[in-house]
Length: 63
Image (cartoon, rainbow, N blue to C red; front, side):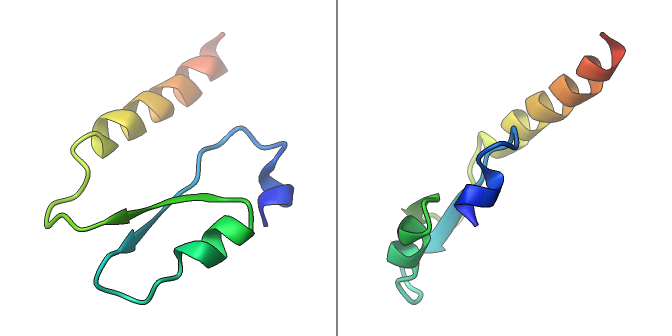
């Protein structure tokens, strides 16, 4: 899976809850990134990061 994405300009982040089955080693074996997450709220940077990526994609079409 990771090899198929190596030429694509994107970011994949896998989040595994600490109180669920430990599947992060499987994610690492496939060459992907991931973290354990035990917060009740979502990442506070996610919407901002997503907006920046989306805006970059839109503006690149105007160049």
